[in-house]
Length: 221
Ligand code: G6P
Ligand code: MG
View 1 (cartoon, rainbow, N blue to C red):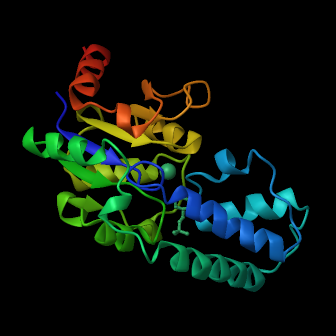
View 2: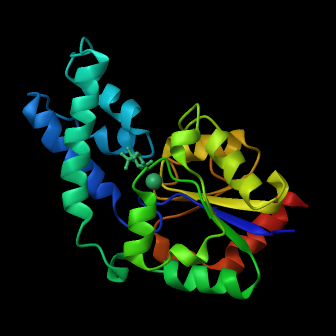
């Protein structure tokens, strides 16, 4: 039986993925690196360091020291914090407010499984921080997505089993992490890109708790 929902944040609850991409784009420009079209899908869901390494690889610039990489990540984060400072509850993606309210009404427990260290800031700005019983602190993780660690941790925060939760992702590496944790994966985006997900909707506006429960039940029975 479904007892809990685990949410990625960027690109699922709000469109902050576009700000991550914009901030990385600005850093890439400083480094004279042109990001390919595929950058959007490749960066989605990846930790700060993993994202930087992907960008440096695009530019064949994998020779920087740890200290230089830290400075690049700090620069990107300053740009990102500037971009997200004006976020408000208006920035919650379509369908999400209803989904969270329906889940709360149905007694489902909810947690956040975002790789972003900025997740608590954004949840506060969106005015939805109180809805979540747990937020995984990515600073305590050993491995980033696609490793299942973050989803296993989120499930533990809710004291639930893998077969009792559904997790929501917009990133390929995120769906891989959910499946690695043995959980039911709802993908939001292109079904050919997110083909490992158990159930895919094109946009958050297409999410309905009743449909999700029906699909979850048919997979778990
Ligand atoms: C999320 C986003 C990624 C981002 C990562 C780290 O997973 O999807 O694009 O790189 O979090 O975010 P942070 O805010 O800690 O740099
Ligand atoms: Mg995401």
